Amino acid sequence: MSAPAVVDALPGPFAFQPASTALLVIDMQRDFIEPGGFGAALGNDVSRLGGIVPTVRRLLEVCRAAGLTIIHTREAHRPDLADCPPAKRNRGAPSLRIGDTGPMGRILVAGEPGAAIIDAVAPLPGEIVIDKPGKGAFYATALPELLRHRGISHLVFAGVTTEVCVQTTMREANDRGYDCLLVEDATESYFPEFKRATLEMIRAQGGIVGWTARCNAVEAALRARE
Image (cartoon, rainbow, N blue to C red; front, side):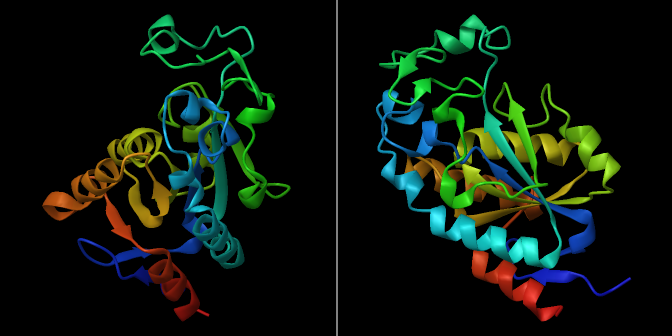
């Protein structure tokens, strides 16, 4: 077996073999990142999320070149909303709820324009795309079987939002025995204080949930193996 890639991370080095590692890019969708989508309907400044797009694109390029499995997720419900509990749809007071029709079609409904991943970080042919009805990518999806089938033991995370779908999926993965790294500048929240707190929680107590590092550190670790 070749030498692992070793990332300069917190709380300590994160070592992984690219062949047994997947990059999970969480919910880089128009509904969360562009004006007129669900994120804006909740009253958020979506430009914060758009700021990470170049870093996510670079991380994808680096991980593709190194041979990692690439997995994209989308939070997207069936058109009949049978997989969207009323408690989720009716919560809060957004200007548009899940399933309502907005400028980019029905909010967070599979197949609608707003549910699509933005063009700048779109999946390439052959890359895995998972539609998930919940915040975590393991709930009610084929992700567990896909990872087992490919012999994946380590996961690298990017996407939005840091404290909701990204952190939920990372905690789900942690409980299932995966070693997880969150790329700090390839994830974002509508609330900067929430992102800071999430990063601190993940790497606290010796990495109770996982590791964090910046994209440059991941890139350096992969290039060092070449």
